Image (tube, rainbow, N blue to C red; front, side):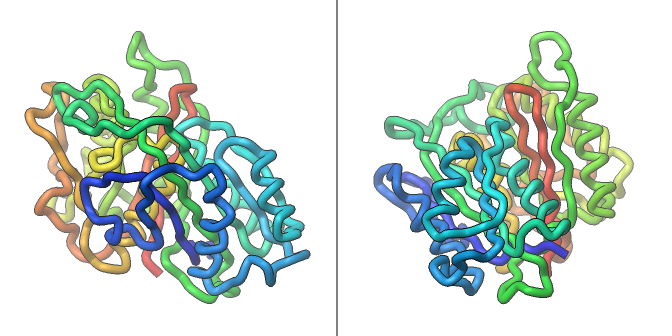
Length: 323
């Protein structure tokens, strides 16, 4: 069993809600090109380790983006596990995490450090045009941020924040028309991710949408969830939310922030807020088994999931269970 044992991150403010609601995250006034080593040390400390005491250990570094930076991080502490970059755009953080979990299961490393960052230039201008599902959504407001998750095999972990139940990443196939997203591809990705995690939709209490922030793109994503959740009983609905409604676009870092929000729900039994903006797009339709994260809370702590999509057509879904 693979678990998330440590979390750390930084988001550049001003932020519309308290950073304390994200475990292990801090708020900064500006992005720092050299922030990653400190965040790696903080995430390992959260997991009960010291980075400088892991020299010559099989510690893997999985970075969304540049593989050379993964190697520099490994070299800084003389780690000897895999060190690689994953270029999958907005899905990069979650693809890197799934590769890390696979290598841990296969014994290629003892601890996996998964990193992502977005050094967006300029001050984020969040407004209602960034809101997921909103009629006026037009995608915007990049925010600078970074995140680090530490993964370990459960039997060797000193802390267990959540279990990696399973997931899937792959190309989604050719999009239909001008939409840029494949409904069939996202639908099959969700179904296969659930199957690999040995979960059904009713087992999932909360899910984070990718929420591109465009009327058509959000509608295609919701349609895929409808395809998978439409036969799920409505008496135990799955609550949906999105970190983008509060933070805007964090690129590859966004998937790791979504997972941190799920871990916060596991620990505190309180759903992270989502700032929905009405009116919704006329294309927004929810089945009975999906409800918005507003005043709704799942019936007990169940599994949580997150979906990440990229402009190049790569998708990833990760499902977590409470430990």
